[in-house]
Length: 322
Image (cartoon, rainbow, N blue to C red; front, side):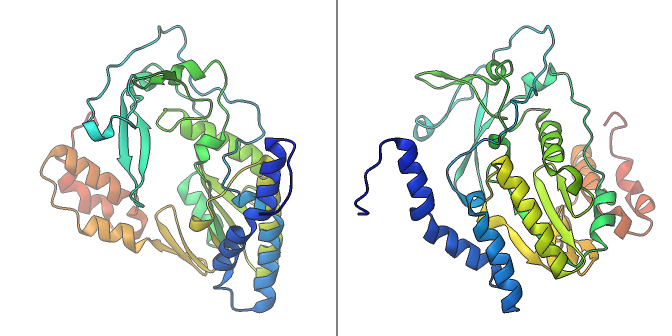
């Protein structure tokens, strides 16, 4: 209804981004900043988000970096896996070849998963380090304001090298396909994404921004600093062509949950949701259940005095080969 003519699909897409997405993005920006009580502060944050609104563009995008190599199988021959059986109602959406699964997400939509265990078994492991959790929280404990970003299907924004693409192959009843972006489930996915985000954040890392794989957080001691830091990181992510999920982002908060911990005014505690999950876990019935429970509880061992002594009775049932 705008009475405009477009010479190409690209021109139409640019128009849609500039005009038709504006109302949706404006609502998301207003909603993400409504908790900021100071009108001056609220406007400052809104100006930054609106100036970087392309970050919230729902159109799929890949970041502007060279395609990443993440699946080095050496001289191993290609592998083939039989399909999982699928119910009749899933036939139109369930892919087959390398084993696939459909996983229901919290919002009731379906996540397409591929069982890459056989591929992972022959993949040379990438030893690129992930940040230490204790060092991350040492940094965050000195801050007061936090912004947490959620990438929109973060792995799918990372281009995959042409050499690796055939190794991700799967097929439907009608055709054969392969990923052109980093798929979920491959053993080197976390290391690859960590390397990418470390490079993109650059000197900001450990100064006022951190990322544990695709969980990114900005932290500052004052609101004025946070405005500056937020602007810097938004600009960096925009220039890289990243896309964010606005519904899962938390902007300029004094309290947030990050990596299973609750952070408020620099004080770090275990996330109540995770603790309730542990408390509601049934008593371990098998060595495997005992092992899983101990590992889950061990994540919070610094908050549990004499954890080793308390966990010792369960450790006796954990196979020494684990």
